[in-house]
Image (tube, rainbow, N blue to C red; front, side):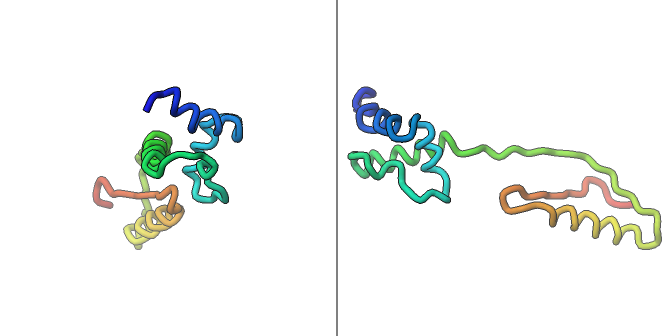
Length: 109
């Protein structure tokens, strides 16, 4: 299929309806949407499937890892257990979309 034909079938109708086809593409990725931005387009099911796969691959957010070294110490009698409880509470702060993982690099003293 030629590029001009794709614009006539997909790009320009989405631009007219949503202001920019990028907005429609982002809308197709969100799970909270009420309407399918591609419902009004007269395209084949194969082309629609390929388009959605391509959009999902190109516009999906990429995970970012943030790493930090922290030093935890407790000088009381139950020190190791207190450090362990603190680290477990830190992992509980994470959510499903933004998990918090804590890994011990060195054994506690």
